[in-house]
Length: 111
Image (cartoon, rainbow, N blue to C red; front, side, top):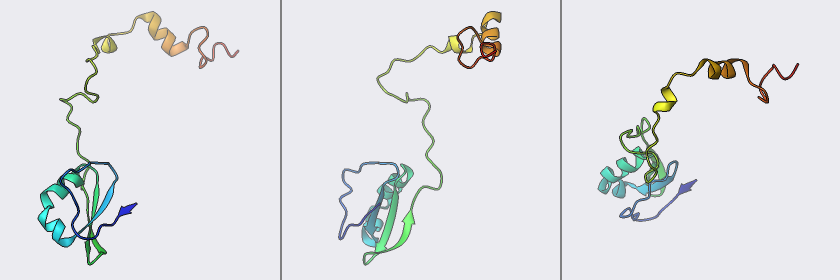
C-alpha cells in the first residue's frame, strides 16, 4: 500500500513501521535524506516521485541486525539459562529418545 503525498511530508515525528511505504517528492528527499535513510534502515520503503510520478525507491539493502546487548522485550527480568545447557540425566535422555508413557508422539504407546 503506497501513501501518496502532495507537497512536503511531515517527517518531524517519524514512525518506523516495518513494511510501510511512503512517497515523497524530490525536494523533500533532498532535504531529509539522512532521515529517510534511517527510515529505510528500519524497514520502510521510500518512493521518490517527480511531479507525483514515482521514479525511484529507497530501501535497505540488508535488514538491520538486532543489538543483542539490549533485551528483546524490555521490562522482563533476565532468565537464567544455565539449566538449559546442563547435561540431561540418562532418564531424561531416554524420555527424549524413546518417549514416555502418555507421550502423544511415542510409538511405544501406539502398538
